[in-house]
Length: 296
Image 1: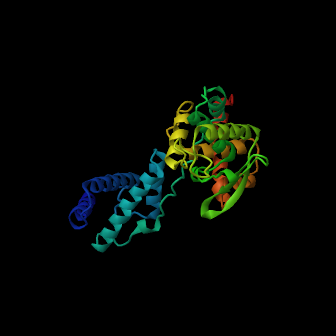
Image 2: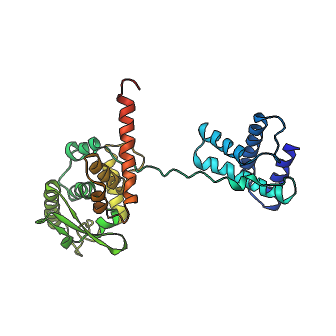
Image 3: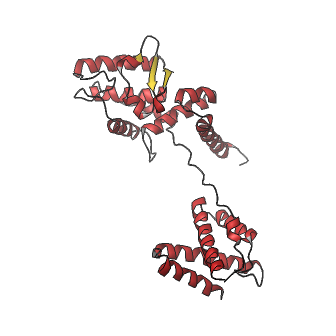
């Protein structure tokens, strides 16, 4: 009878709901696994007598065995659909699954390039004096030292880059401006870039970063530039300007910058957005501990 109820439900999915065979197979696996689980708990436990606690225990066991939250939630969705079906057909008298909440999916921690890798890129890599190479190093330094978004960097005009005050006027999300300071190294690189750009490129706009034809640089060109540079020093799968922005925030927090200061520099509306970087640095701390502690 127990297995027959599952088969009835799977036929319902196939022929009445027109669900794909992949979904039918996946739901069938989840239901079969749950049935095996509750039958081992005690003699006589059936689909009609399991309660919400049994379902929660099963979901917990799935997670402990290595299933991620999204997989466990799919298992739970299968149970919820099954019990709605069974209740409507009179196969059970109650629906315990509706009382069980799904697991919250853990947001992935932001990836970042190690300080040692960025030092290698900026200090030990051979950079030519061609316009593209000078521009590339300037882009890397600007994102890493000022934490700009790709769109913010593309939108910079000459008037937004103040070498005397060593600060950038950045137009961020929702058309909000912020002032971002920068250091001596970036100031020197900006001066080098401007001299190279003005000598080699005929500009057709006031854009700070331009292509070889003088037009404002595109977001895709910035992405490709950063990806090409980071590929020289890191094996990260993702090598985007946003990863470089993450590296800026992580480096600041690792060197004792306050969270509120980092929020302002990044242009985040909420401190909660910035707090994810504290989890990144804590993960670093845990890894160092696990690798280094003599009793671990």
